[in-house]
Length: 194
Image (tube, rainbow, N blue to C red):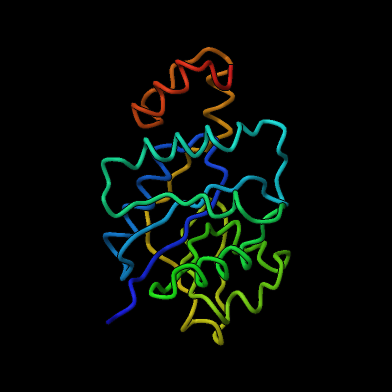
């Protein structure tokens, strides 16, 4: 039986927004991946966590956002791992938990350009394929030796950020068009980011 190909899209999703869903949907439609799993990260070692909403709330937002999309799933695998969580450890854990699946890392061009700062980045590239999506102002150079494992996808460049959404909600602006309806309802009902 052929292994199911799963894209791992990891992030704080604080909050998940339309850009995340468009990118994941694009990858499902235009690459060989069967599914995309949103891995909600409790704490990114390279990010400031001051504005981070509780893990469970972010998981709940992702769950409600992806409901209409059968090929998009959510994973809380990092909630059960030592913190901070490192991508290589997460991919290894998923591979151990789901030996019938083949995992591919999905990252933005900004993260690709920071990859040398990541834990065991060389083993990561040797062990797992990488799909890079474009980001405004970020040039992507893939060394010849990595081109079989790493590739740039021609996804639309979406400049919507969770930071912008959080800040705008905090200023009392209506951001309903930027996040899925169910997610916006959760944010409003709970007074998140106010």
